[in-house]
Image (tube, rainbow, N blue to C red; front, top):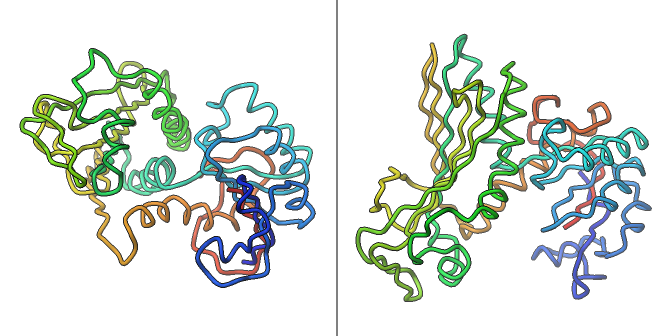
Length: 326
């Protein structure tokens, strides 16, 4: 694949070579903050990964004939999207003959691709439960842990609703996409947040301390319901200690997928350390799936496409043009 453009959102990056911005050698592609420069480069596909999103910017790309792959949570499954947003995006796709696809590691791979493969061994399904485990101090600064995420604070009376809705948004769409692929008629999405209290003081790198009785673990659960039964469940387990009340039975960084049915499975995936810093390794988990989806997205019919509406997503090394926005 050939990189033909890079859109940036901060003035200090404008004009700098894309390779240098990534810590590599120069590649002759200067960064720009002008979307028209990206469109003029005529990429086959744009990887759209900013912290926020601009619907007009997205629609402009799609209407200009540029396919889009994004890691944004708002675009995982058309029927579950905000109606107004869906209509704008769908119209732009039809106008430009283009496709938009949302993916990543979680939501994405672990909530769509892997469960679809594992359940292909079953004929009767009771439930799929996906647990994600994140040892927060390994990848986050003490200030972020205690001041932003709320660890070490007194146990609140209820989970922060805004945080719950933000965290659950993409997972509800992704589970809905999986349900559709498996022929399940979802009657609703339920979500909840829980806290685990430290049973003893926990010392964090940098000197911060989580005191006994304060927040040392959080769990967010998103469940796709069929009638009154939770059929597809995702649980994000964030922890600073494994010794909490209640006990969330947390494990090493990674995932566990449990399939309950006539072919029960219990699959554990750990994230072993590599020669990269953990934060870079985790970023790759999200970004690589998007890059490897380029060929499948470029070959897809126009519209908002979920994982299961594309061809196989494999690591691609064939010639293609791509632009990165983010």
